[in-house]
Length: 359
Image 1: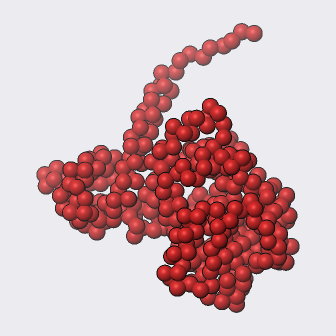
Image 2: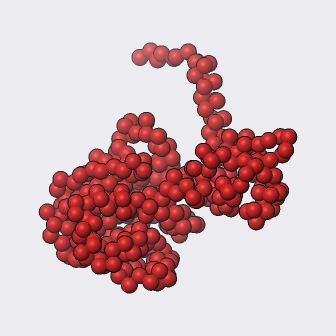
Image 3: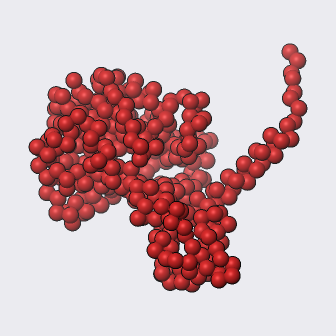
């Protein structure tokens, strides 16, 4: 067989090299954006007119020299405007609309925290590439904190007007009083919001992280919520029958070691005519169908460095973040859910909402 060697395409090579330089700068800006969020610099500048680096540092309670260097990255990256004559810096309101805590649920800086968080486990993940297996949740510092912030944007802020209206008669039933479970609840922000909104209903949150449940218990007590409880429990070992009227999972199924068993357990735990609402990643199970997905590279990276890895660390299936709609529907059917409906919300470009009834 004669092998045909294509001529080297100089313009294609140049375009790819330029793309790599853009990635280099974008990666650096992702780190600096995370720092701007965590230090409160974006929040401080969102409340200020044009100001000097010292004034900005004072407003944020930070060291001026570090703030000045951070500003250099933000100016050259197009985040912040700079007046060379007055040596002042300004965060345009059009940019602040996606970078400050006041911008919730549109604060993209929250998600950018995942870049340095995932980079911190690069060496350990390299070992997994060679030997297989994965990393436990304990390997990821700040994971539950970042996820709680993300949940506050995509879930908590949209519960009343977006997510709960997806459930037929859901709000009426919650007002009358039903039993609700959030499986894989993390720090329980979504469940606490529902417990506050619907005092006649009873709410249970389950997560295997002792730290997350301790935080949830502390906050729910501080908020004076008496219709809620949190338990430390492995979702794979969850075993209740005909106990709940409504069950939620928020971006939790694809992380599970044995998601098939968890979905079966959810089906068993629902009462007759009970409802299960599964929020999970909006993507296809086939990589070819995700090429035009705006956040696909980010989601595959999160999967490789976290979601797939934590499942494999527990001897699990390692579905990964991008398990996709096709596999999700199949696993829901296999668990006993017939006629699951796919719902989407405008505010949440990363997730699908699967509405399932027990009967």
